[in-house]
Length: 75
Image 1 (cartoon, helix red, strand yellow):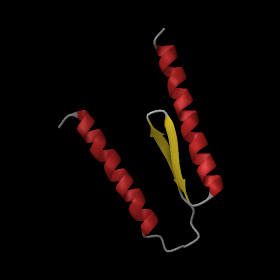
Image 2 (tube, rainbow, N blue to C red):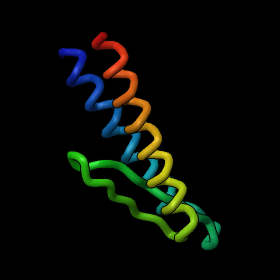
Image 3 (tube, rainbow, N blue to C red):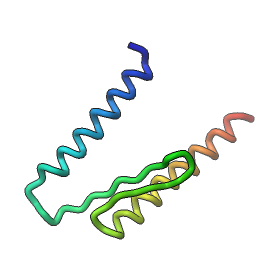
């Protein structure tokens, strides 16, 4: 297996474990949020509006850091 295939399998397994953990929780008042990007378009899912705002803001911050880092490393 190549390293990219192993990385994909690890990420997929992590997503499955997170979704199972959310589905099997006994506390009905737990909150969750997931955010990411499809191309340059941000998206998010959450059980609470504040959690959604935080998740999208955190993913935007990671994207800005990544862009600045890549521009800096090209010099």
